[in-house]
Length: 313
Image 1 (cartoon, one colour):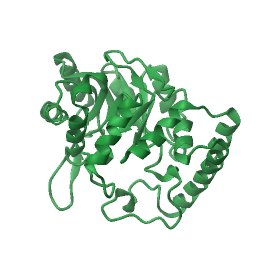
Image 2 (cartoon, one colour):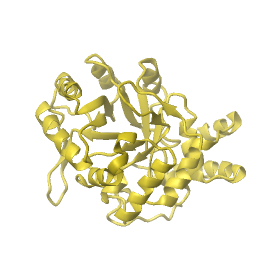
Image 3 (cartoon, rainbow, N blue to C red):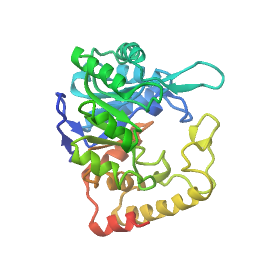
Image 4 (tube, one colour):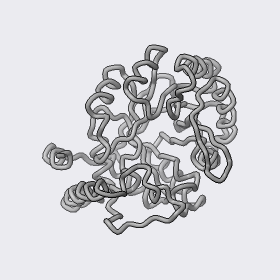
């Protein structure tokens, strides 16, 4: 595989252009998930050159971090662990969660993540969501304190709008930004992606397969179990008129995939990787087969004509 790598200041390991996303590892919101199979998927990802593994405490209420830490073992020093802080939960019937990026919570949560991940440092530590109740300067100072202490090595943010990202940049250097980006979700193309490029901020694109929709596995009759977050319509990908429009995009992907002897997932991932503003695309996988399929996206290119066809609105 011709995996592309990038150098991120402060890290000992180069950043692979594909990253392994860990939401599904938590076993919550993704239907049936086998811990044994996901551990195998992580090992296969490492064997095929993936160095970036992304998770968060909220994924399975700590379970995702625990499985990742258990999976890595002795190879931990050879990979990049990205996790997050600032989204906490209450264990009740409604599963309440809310942003808290206060210094007190950051100091408390980092030690919990370190224990679950079985490591003494975190490579990339991201502020998971904006916290309207905490001044961004206070959050930044708490994160910088962790970097100075050696508990974390790089600071990033997830799901920050451009205005808040600019405000955060006034506090200090931002290493990475995580944003949703796919053929279905392209709102960051106009302003946010160019801003990151101009300010030398690495972009980690999550949901490049739009929660599995762009794999081509689903049609207008798709149904999900109650324990699958896609049944609740929170992302808008699988509901109403938008779903039918999204399926038209899937058909365009499928036509290119058939001609190039690829799968729709490989084409959709490759489209994201062809964007020069994207440093790495994070895919989720529940099996070795899905990991192997997705990694192929690092090993071919799309022509200008194919890119134009896929990108038309």
